[in-house]
Length: 461
Ligand code: GAP
Image (cartoon, rainbow, N blue to C red):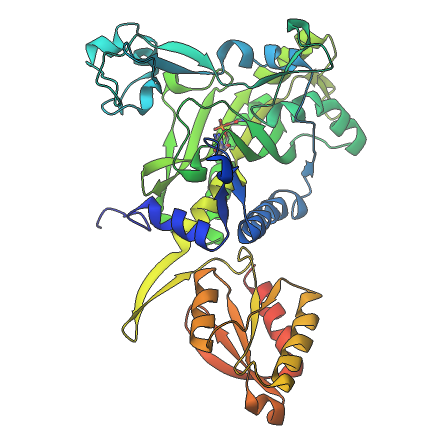
């Protein structure tokens, strides 16, 4: 079998489509932008919302054993001391001798195979003869750079009032473990799912929305008996893989990669990433972690609160272990967008389409008039649109010829277009066109909504 190839050769293809069609814009662009912060436009906000809904559906709605939580971004600062983030949540930073340009060591050319031990070696820059990519000067020894953003709580800006913007949602689930368990009466194993913003002062952000300083996470913390952790960890691997596959990601562009012992995060006993083949190489899409009893034990010790679980079946009290699935809607939406990108020749022209899963597509259906000058046609379009909108995201467009209108909808991934033509006024039927096959079928007006909603529902199976 030949090696898998990325869906698009160049990231620029996606960045330019995203900007042109209103998926993603650079933040504060009129002021020159701000590095590694991106704004979601009208279509991007729909796509990302649909990704979050799809995750929530699989992780919470369809399961008995997982419940949701929405904890604050700001937390007691001791949380981040206890969790180990103040001491250990850092990346290796190197600085150049001439102009103090700063880089993340393991993002420099020639550092692809560094071990974690190498990244802490003070002689590493010299050993690899690393040079500043901007001015060619020598690079210094690596320093650890903490990735947490700090701010102040209250009106006095002094050290005692420093708090952090959370770098992961997970800790909100740990400090609420008892609240959730007692209020829901859940028995082990059970999970807490969260979607929300996290912040990291990444040293070398980039690759569009892949690595941002402000982003969202979709994380699930699954509390288990210690002797169940290894088995349950293995169970979550195919579940998370299949979620990406079921929502359209090409499986040959997915792989698992286990973290080497010296690469494990400070909390992890074992970690396996689901990786995706991006245009810039294989990178983490989501991490699955066996966190052991690290988090709850530490929080119990530092807070003085009992965080043990009492098992009525065995009469035992113990600290549960945690299996975590840690992904993010930005990176997932980006992956779905890249993987859905298609270019093909149709009648001598290049047709660009996004073969997005119908559940993820920003608009499910577009209603288009063949002749916008005929008020009866426009009226029928508006009637159909109004009806469709009660149940799903639908859009109307009459600003070009029908061929162009179809191309526009293809390019933003709209699975179905409904066209009203002159005959519709006679036979009370419209044409439904499929994005992927471009086939057209004639459907009675009163059956259109049912057809679209049925196809949408069928896409979930
Ligand atoms: N609680 C564990 C944890 O935070 P992580 O692998 O550092 O693990 C989990 O992050 C997920 O969060 C990543 O797989 C990615 O989807 C998302 N993520 C992390 N940093 C990100 C960033 N700078 N920009 C966009 N997404 C990010």
